[in-house]
Image (cartoon, rainbow, N blue to C red; front, top):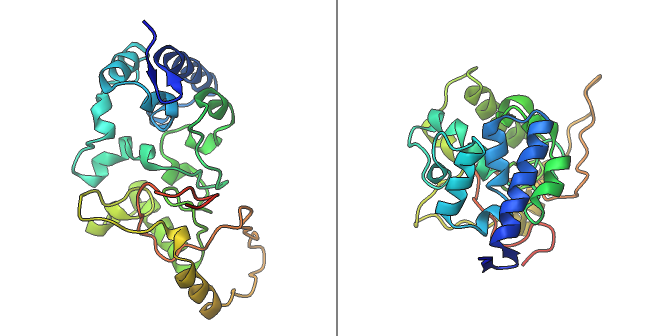
Length: 229
């Protein structure tokens, strides 16, 4: 029997996930990357946890269990395997990770997601969780965390709340970075752009997003980063 959740039916959600899975596999995406990106889709969220778990098992993507996406391991180093699910923006292009149509997004997802370790493979231009533009000290901090996650540095206790992840708990209630316009304008006004360095590629904020004021992630945005609240 076909059931409906939101605007996606149970049958169409399953069909989307199966098709998206096939597209990711044809593009060489790992199971971890495929599972994390599908878990960002409306189709995935339209299914019950039990239904999604059974489908993931069938498709070979559930060795660690679907519930790990909601309750990942406590050790931050061990969270690398599921932390991609918290990314809402492609760090290199800045494009929002497609949620409405899992199949359409699977065909155009940035190739640096394919290995399941974007902190190692992606160029950092935009904050993966918050979508703001990375510059200056904040960019360097995200690069440091990314290097540490790739095994080329030491993760500090607070790093689990920066760049690729965010603090989870009822006491955390932070605004989406793009909404703190006055703080961003002040930061932009007091920090003039550095002179271009020879042979350094020019980084362009193609989405015209606010510049990040911190490497700390605010978590899932309540307001749409493109249209606002």
